[in-house]
Amino acid sequence: MTDDLLARHRAVLPSWVTTYYGDDAIELVSGSGRRVTDGSGRTYLDFFGGVLTTMLGHDIPEVREAVERQLATGIVHSSTLYLIRQQVELAEKIARLSGIPDARVFFTNSGTEANEAALLCATNHRRSHQILAIRNSYHGRTFGAMAVTGHRSWSASGLSPLTVSWLPSGDRLRGRMAGLSDAEHVDAAVEDLREVLATTTAGDVAALIAEPIQGVGGFVHGPDGLLGALKKELDNHGILLISDEVQTGWGRTGDHFWGYQAHDVVPDLITFAKGIGNGFALAGVVGRADLLNAVPGTSFSTFGGNPVATAAGNAVLDYVLSHDLQANARRVGTILLDGLRAAAADSPIVAEVRGRGLMIAFELTRPGTTEPDPAATLRVFDECRKRGLLVGKGGLYGNVIRMGPPLTLTEEEAREGLDILVAAIREIDKPERA
Ligand code: PLP
Image (cartoon, rainbow, N blue to C red; front, side, top):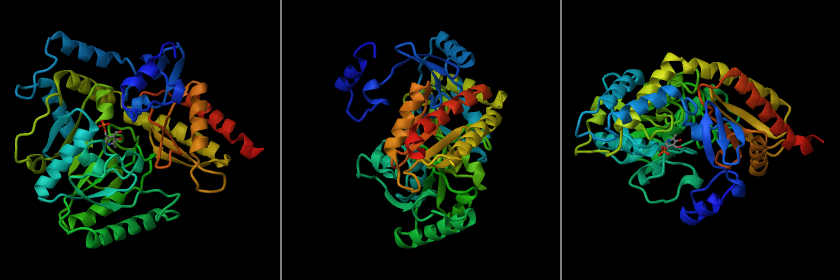
């Protein structure tokens, strides 16, 4: 680092606000497209996009101009006590795209708040504070969102406003779903749901909250159709489905616009955040009118859906649709997935490559076992950076390399990143091969 910014960060921010790269933390001082430059002038290809958030890439003229036009009006904020044209327009688009008939949209500042709002709607409608959640999930950092987070590292408190029962994750390497075929997996999950409902709940559960592909959990996901099969059983009890699309929304998964669309189901509530603002604080919940309207008091978010954030959101969504970035995610993601699978086939340390579209991860284990290898993961992660590629890390055991590049990623950039990833894996698995 060129100055003492890391020391100052550590001196003034809580210890749990951690940075990547330890004592070698970097500050991103400029960016363009899929490239970012750090304080020492080093440029990287960005395959993590600030945790799947700079969905179009950096410094996109259409977004910058939309925000500048809003700033030029002099109205940065008005509150929802006054009509906000940008907000209504964006809500209309999201409602139309949601797949939920006659949907309503409520805007918040973060994915956490979006999930809180969804949980509020579901629990009020059902007059129950019982929730089903999935192990290895992440839904946010407030008490309700943390209560449905099934990931030890992110569960900072056991205090909970909800009573939560847990369903298994889609982990195929270990745990009760390991080694099952897709059909066996779905059957086992439905059977488990029936058992959980019969044994650990009072029956009148409000909702199941699920990520179609688990983000923080290392892009673990069940087979296509799983959420639909679970929902059939939930429908027998009037239990709602909340799809947390904070990471999986807006076409990132390539095959679908929303992650839930791989599952032959339409959720009752969908939460969104991250990519829709391309970095501006914008999130929300879209869902059935009767559920959104079930909140019995006035509820209000001072900043949620403010004119600047929603100006950005409209520009981002228009860009995604007019450039068909979903198709790009599928095309370019296939290059990465195929290339990584080929590399994994003869790497003793890569146990699984998973994900879809431009949501891609690989899991590192000790050779010949399913024992997680976080140390090797850290070395691959650092090696990527050394070679000019920023990626993410995650998974329950810290042994997953995660990537969510901007959906504008080009084929050339995908190949450039793939070459670095393969070289990094080879560098670290060298002793195992020798
Ligand atoms: N839900 C999912 C699936 C997430 O990945 C995240 C953040 O990573 C959240 C919710 C919380 O979003 P935020 O950090 O914007 O509050």
